[in-house]
Length: 273
Image (cartoon, rainbow, N blue to C red; front, side):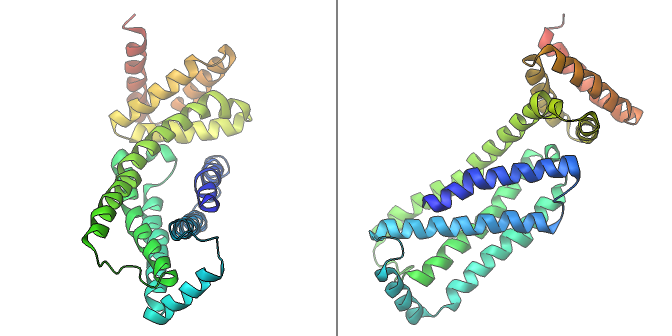
């Protein structure tokens, strides 16, 4: 299980963050190659976790002889195709259906709305729900044979709890993650980069702020202001100047939109003083 969770959470998370920064700074990892890498990483780790749970509940040492014998019986019992088809569907769904939607959201990452995050996480569910039974069909002879009502009574609440975790809780985590990443970028990451990198990224972010719904725009501007308020004075001065330069490059109507939101956040922060 650890061999699945460790790559899934910290390692995949760091990979996604590095790819996100590469898209912002160097315009790399756009398109299908990035999607295939991220979703393959996801599928492989999910399969690792599923096999880990299987061994835990069976009380087996990983990949001992009984595992291979049970897998042989499972394939003889129902054939390999049901499991392989489910796994293929789950992987294809994550890459081509969910991946296509993620590409449609576009860059930079702050463009993603809460509704889009909900849709993205709901699209996560069919892929996982197909992958896990798929691998179980290949390794467990009697998987899916419910001969006691108590099995469903235990299983359904766990399934619903898992569904809640990978939808509502995951959406909340993603929204908070984006907010924290914006704060880190304006107060720590961008000040450490050369001026041309800062200006390039700030132009992208300011242009996106102008195009997003007001509530979302205020959400990120507040996050930026909070981070800069706690940053050293030289960082505040540097980012303030370069943010104004990025604003100056916007068309007048978009510039007024962003500045109105900045004024509103400043008014809230100072209490009208």
